[in-house]
Amino acid sequence: MAEQNYKNHARYVPLYHFVLFGILVLTLIGSFVNLYQSWGDHMRIYSASLISVLTVSMLMLFFFARIFALKAQDRAIRAEENLRHFVLTGRLLDPRLSIKQIVALRFAPDDEFVALGVRAANENLAPGDIKRAIGNWRADEYRV
Image (cartoon, rainbow, N blue to C red; front, top):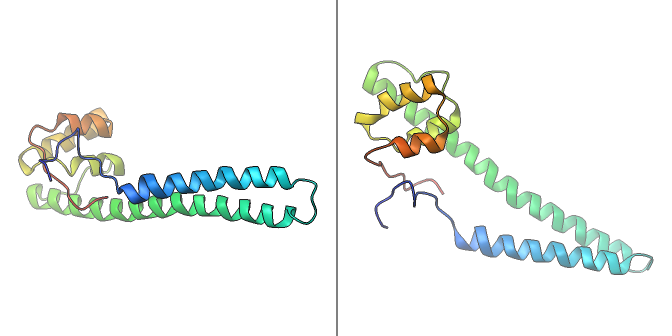
């Protein structure tokens, strides 16, 4: 993999993020077309509505599976960065930092981490601003 930086740090799994999502969207559209065409036909309306409900459920599952995995990763990152801050300073991270700010701080190397954390807390920096302020990017190859 190329050296990680602000411009290329986002990671995607093409089969999940693009192919599966595309299939789900096309299936949703097709199920709604089928439901519309079945309206008034008592023989088809039940199966058409069931297919639509199942497709909406799969789309919700697609999003919630991603959200829940990211929440778990965020918790692990918060614990790791809190430990790193404690090792470097003898104190825990500033409680004013949000989880998104802490997740952004994980890219800062040790020599920039503490000062950038203080600045992020004092100035309430957005995660993107924190990432752009990092001079020497520290790669995170584990989060997807």
